[in-house]
Length: 89
Image (cartoon, rainbow, N blue to C red):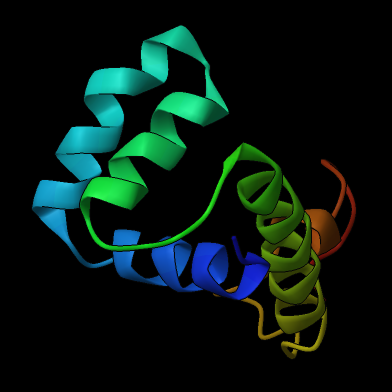
């Protein structure tokens, strides 16, 4: 089993509509083992623990990516939006 395979699965999931639908069908159970079974049927060798570790890595990478974005006003990140009543930047 492999965390790398789980990261690849997460990446593929972002663009593969059929795979997304398969995950949606098992997601109400909230069972990572069921999602791992979907991944396995799609050719990814991983288990629920691999998925859990990959999710942590994926979110850390996303957080770093978004934290590095410039604050551009119109595309202002929600965590940096001005408070109501304060002047715009």
